[in-house]
Length: 373
Image 1 (cartoon, rainbow, N blue to C red):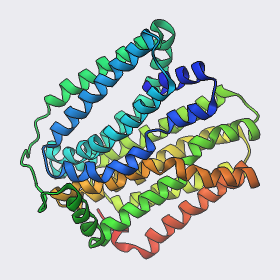
Image 2 (tube, rainbow, N blue to C red):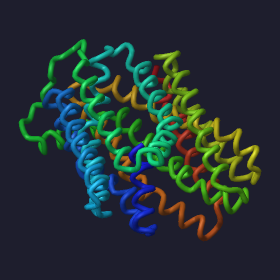
Image 3 (cartoon, one colour):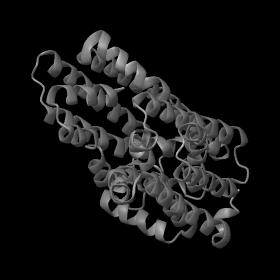
């Protein structure tokens, strides 16, 4: 909701695409800078307290943004700072949220819980943007930010009710957060399975996620359609992701390594056909498969990493995974260049090729990951 309201308001008041780009990508740099610190901290102190503190800070910022708009003292730099604060808080809250899940449900249900969490997140992509747009028009942007503040407070309240099965705090062997980061990196380098899982996820996400950001180019230049068609395709990707999440939640711990490869392979094939066939109707069907396949690298891989990581290192491993979100704007750049030089379909085919290489490598040359259950 905040992404929709903030982006629309910033562009409406500045009429600058550059400023809009700065504000919408302002979260990326803090994630790259602070994620490792957030992961180290989540392995040292109570994870629930980190989440509660983060929600409290974001609640205050939502109130301040609403007040600044209401009293006409807002400036685009304030929204940039708010976006950066979102990224900073996400850097600390994200690793704590993910690594808290095994403490809530137990190790046996990690995959099911992560998949349900993914399904909930995917569901918001259907609901939240529309609600944000309606609130913007009904109660103005400041009113929308007040509603966001209320939701932040509800999240703060509900987090307080979480009662982990295992409430013990697994402290690191080092008292220093920086030494804890180095300790986590050393643990990662000495654990080949976790290292390969993280690298494969990072490559798969960096190769496929930019497709959604560059999809408007295909809609306009290849399919010769308007914004409604773009929104419909994004919704179909979300539908496929939701279906994949529910399926993974249902099956739990079953052939997860093989399903990981299958998911990457499905995404690669979907992108291949999108790149080869310039037809909107076929693309619409393929979007469902693209969303379905993209669920595996994120949900299953995260579950496998948690299963193969000692609890005292889980926060730090999650923080390394989170850093890939900070790399997203960087990942878009080479594909943008390919589009400029060779066209959108060629860029999509390149994404497909990268995913095929990752899937083939895991299936034929990384049997330890492929055979993980």
